Image (cartoon, rainbow, N blue to C red; front, side, top):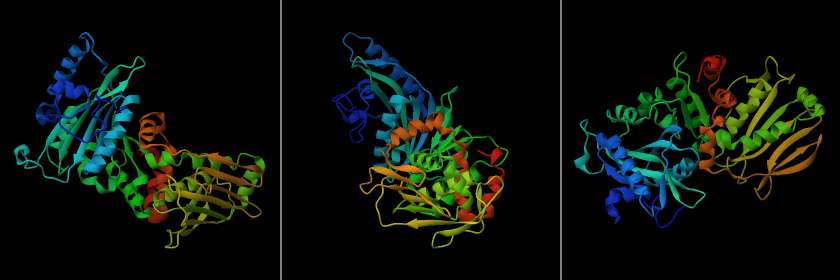
Length: 414
């Protein structure tokens, strides 16, 4: 919540640029510049002095330092950084964490901060807080921003490792791993949970590239890591309602005559459509016979344990309709004597479920903000093996045997 003593929602400004001392700047959410090699020492000093000030008579805040995660986040460009910080401020109210923001700036910055490897490096710290029931502001965690125009700086991996708090898990959030594979490699070994966002991808090929990069970053036999996709969490209402189409024994019998799956998506929903198709293939035990055609069609055959008894065609159809996140417009399952579907309502506020075996209904759909998705990804919702399966099978529609072979070994992966 933004207020007179809250600089978190304003544009970025350093502590020295506002009429505050370092402790006041820290406790009100302003950014305080520190030397990269003295981040930990400066944080300890700020926490100690903030605690002393909070104990003074009439103090309007409390210091309750907490940490459930080390959360490393990558941003690129000033606009993305400001949006990300707003999300992290909200997340920290529910999941106190040590936040390490690795910001890839577009400006090389002041030459006075050139590191020993020739790369400019700038560091700052700030506090995250929440409002208590009594109305006091509780400072609960800290946020460290390391800013450089080149995230592959040789200093970066060792600097980040030195800032990770022991005895708590580490999560790494990168919106598009395929674009950042080079500098990710030295940090991946430290992550217990790897988070990304397929909702930011704009093509089938980008999702397939992410799946391949994740296979490369976490090779077979190495440390297991939990993966979670924020885009997968956005698909939850669709997955739930599609599954509900087969709640009755009569509807399940119809699966034996399934002949076509159709996924309709709006502009920007390509990755979501591929991920949802991968989920359908996994649940119905269907395998692609080739790779996806340019018109979005592909043949599928039932495998062992599949309720389907004949080859099926999958169609991914781009529609002119607009759709709220995650960009899915309609999912239709054509059977021999029936058609079951889930589609967005005309006003986009809900999902209409249609089946000859159930009364029609409309389920309201509320778009979940990124902060809520990130909180879920850091909780038990961040452990979903179905997401791994859907990602691999969705990528297999484009890459064929390459991802299918990886899918066969998925029990010892990720």
